[in-house]
Amino acid sequence: MDFITTFLIAVGLAMDAFTVSLGIGTSQIGRSQGVKFRLAFHFGLFQGMMTLLGWLAGSTIADLISQFDHWVAFILLMFVGIRMIRAGLNPEQKTYQDDPSRGSMLVILSIATSIDALAVGLGLAMLAVNIYMASLTIALVTLGLSLVGLFIGYELGVRFGKRMEILGGLILIIIGIRILLTHLL
Image 1 (cartoon, rainbow, N blue to C red):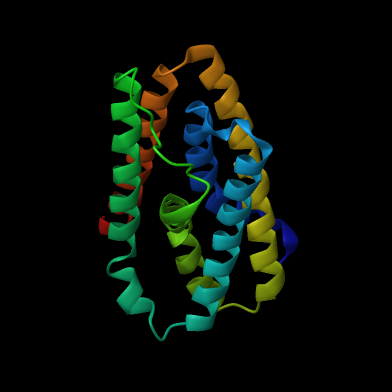
Image 2: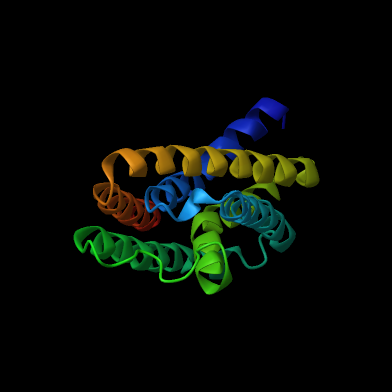
């Protein structure tokens, strides 16, 4: 597989992480460079590692994972999306009580945005591909697009305030529904 194809796959996979980053940025949590780096780094790391893990698993567990991976992503994204909407509707409430770039929220968001990478890795196992270069490309593209999403989200949040949190939550819910419907239909 050539680099252009790998890059396009990476961009497609990174869209969920980009959108989640956009939503987090709107909540104004991502002001510090540390938060931005931790989120982007972990989104990229999980995307790359899930691709590699899927490739390593090959077809041995593909049937087991494919039966529930979309439900996991759907539930996690719904959970975070609903929290964002509730916080956007209540001016006193914060979307994230704790820093989403640390602890369990970071793991939840990282897994939710990288489930598709596991399936892509399973598919790549069937092709003649340098999985290490593909995983690295996917990780770096995700990291970059996550940073872009955080910066854009922050600017939108500064301009439009709490309304952007509602929009960010709706976007996460739509992504969750899209993932679920894509796998069910």
